[in-house]
Image 1 (spheres, one colour):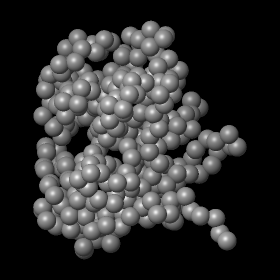
Image 2 (image 1 turned 180 degrees about the vertical axis):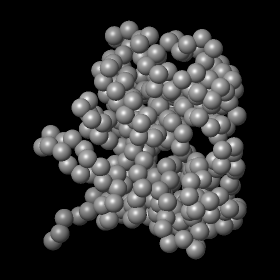
Image 3 (image 1 turned 45 degrees about the vertical axis):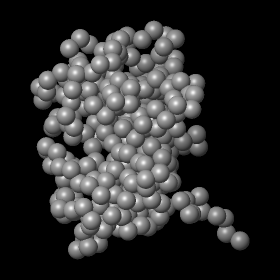
Length: 299
């Protein structure tokens, strides 16, 4: 008898109904889909492989930003890039899209390090929102998570930023712009950009993270774990910051992929393992990896 596949019965094909589709500046969209099977099995860091239009045979991998397993919906933030997502941007409420998901290994927060630092850049923001909401749910069940979310973007953020009501020691004065949804959940957040947006940290989000980490004492820093998603240069910088402050870090990779279920091996990346370097598939072995394994100090 062959060994059972670890992903069997965990990924579902569904006819997902568009519930809402909101456009934001910078050709960014927030898409909410009725996909109850995906919603019931998803975890922070999961993604879906979504058909963008019946005329296009190839799906697109898109990170989950919010999930409601009770109501059965999933929410995706994406930026138009290429013909597929341009087609997806035309979807209207009531339209049906084929969804394959949830896919991938998600984030694993550790209770020994409750001071979680979530760093999202651009379209890497969605997994950080999902993880933050999950940590808030964990707070309700007694786990003392202390999340802080830092976001960076060089185009307008896909929400109306507002001044934060949360005081965060170590954040530079004047850096007050925050994501309203996170503030409503009681999760402090701060925004960074080089585009000159009001209230944002002027610089890269990784520099803001470094300033916050430097302001902690040794005991506080020993409680920190970093989680990040964004473009490759940002993730390399996050891994470097984590090494500088001796803090564990998990990163979610963004990669082009064809099948998204491990068959084509088109999304492989080199990962350092105890047995030596190996090629791992971002779709099912990831997308979340330990930062040093994909961005070692010598890379």
